Length: 89
Image (cartoon, rainbow, N blue to C red):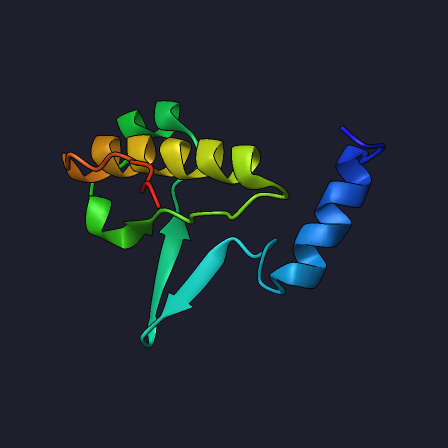
């Protein structure tokens, strides 16, 4: 959309979020593996070693889709019941 190639999108994400391409994230002194693919759940023995990265997206719609995808990943990984809702102003 609007001439943004996949390469340009990655470049923009890296500028907006410097840790965008890192596979291990450090949160409050702890390191977590990233949970990216629902199919990987079959190989995970300890969900507490994993975290889900919630990406913003380049526009409102992509951001909404990314948050929905992240909620699904958290629900699968942790057995939670997270869902994205829009707040009316």
